[in-house]
Length: 265
Ligand SMILES: C[S@@+](CC[C@H](N)C(=O)[O-])C[C@H]1O[C@@H](n2cnc3c(N)ncnc32)[C@H](O)[C@@H]1O
Image (cartoon, rainbow, N blue to C red; front, side, top):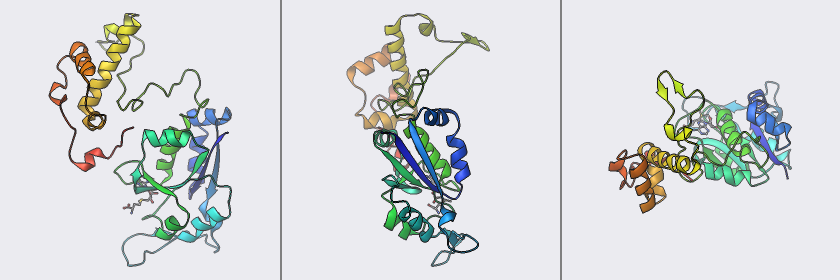
């Protein structure tokens, strides 16, 4: 079964062009996924193809009207479910959600614009709302592309042999270790000697320790969410990295909810 993504947007070219590029373009060429882009203006019924109007109750800006959205969904009964609206008010989009959607038959993404979408469109045709972070974009297109790219690259066969989605940030609730490529010295900075050793077990231990240390210092909330570090992980950190981040070993992570905006796996 090929994963299909439908996108409802006022900027179909922005979606189509990006999805024809790089990893997404190659994955489509391999038949790993299909894309259908729907222009919300095609579902308007006035000569000006109006999609927005002023907000009831007053206030700045315009609101994306419900009717073009509802009509677009109704006129395409084969749209893939769930229908997901991109919204700063949605639940956080995470790697685990990307995995869940990559394992399904696909999804439909609704891109908002202006001050947002008339609530009745959300009530009538939308199954879920996701946010790509605690910041506000001008429209849902970039957010939709984030979702598409992170989902598609997890679809079996989407990536070539030289690309891997297995061993990377969030794959185990941890951030990825630092990466290095040739040459061995860049502006006087040497690649860590262990990576030149050819000792695969040592390299794996070093990477694991770096991954733990980086997560501990940059995203202690992820460490707290997986229940802290176990004895073996503490010992590995101590042995390979030393006291770096030691003060955080017992950290339960930030208590401020806004610091926990990125849901881990
Ligand atoms: C300018 S924003 C609307 C912001 C809205 N007035 C609010 O305060 O929540 C326009 C559109 O951009 C998209 N958008 C903006 N930020 C987003 C985010 N962090 N995640 C997902 N979509 C976002 C949504 O589709 C939204 O309807």
